[in-house]
Length: 126
Image 1: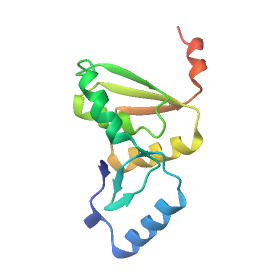
Image 2: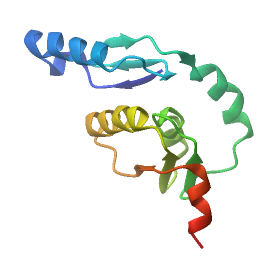
Image 3: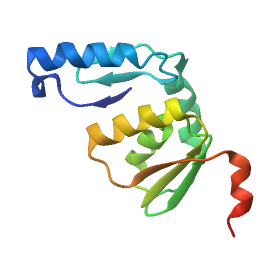
């Protein structure tokens, strides 16, 4: 579970507003998520995939990583535990970018970035 924000940080009014915002952003794709104590029901159980994937990842400590097709950045946030220097996600989906932008703002993380590009745009870079 990617969890951001403690419920105690919100007043009851803010918590209600946050639940309404979280509901308005549906459908949430990759997860599961817990944001300010609100469990977000996502379409994909990405934690199951992460459990298999993490065992095969190389050492990411201090590395620059690209997550092509990152969606809302779920795996990028999970990679933080592996101490990369920076993770850059590439995805063309505006809704996913909005989810990521909310996660990043809530978390205060500064070494995750998502570029709103299609995968075939990578041919434009040297």
